[in-house]
Image (cartoon, rainbow, N blue to C red; front, side, top):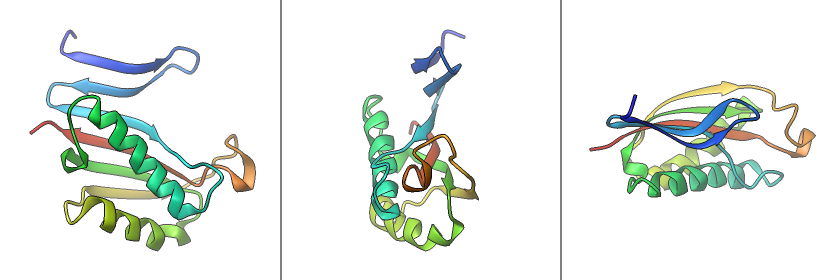
Length: 121
C-alpha cells in the first residue's frame, strides 16, 4: 500500500479528495463557483481539477475519464461548450449523470460536480 497516496483526507466524512495509485490519480468532488450560473460552475469544477492535478505536476492533458454530475441534464450543451474550450480536443472519456445536490445550497447552490481519473504519462 506504500505506492498509494491519499490527499486532502476528510476524516469526518470518510473520503479522500485525491488518491494517487501507481500511474493513476483519482479526483473526487471537483466543484467551484457554487451559486453562479452553470457555465461558471463547470469552469470552477475544471479549475479545481486543474489545481489538484498541478500539485502532482499533471495537467488536464493527463485526464482520461470524467464523471460529470449535473443537477439538470438540459445543461449538457453548456458543459460540452466549456469542455471544448478547456480540454482543447484532448477530451477524456465521459459519463454524465443527472442528480440532486440537496445538501449543497438549495436551488441556487451546487449544479455541477466532476470526478476524474488522470494517467501519469
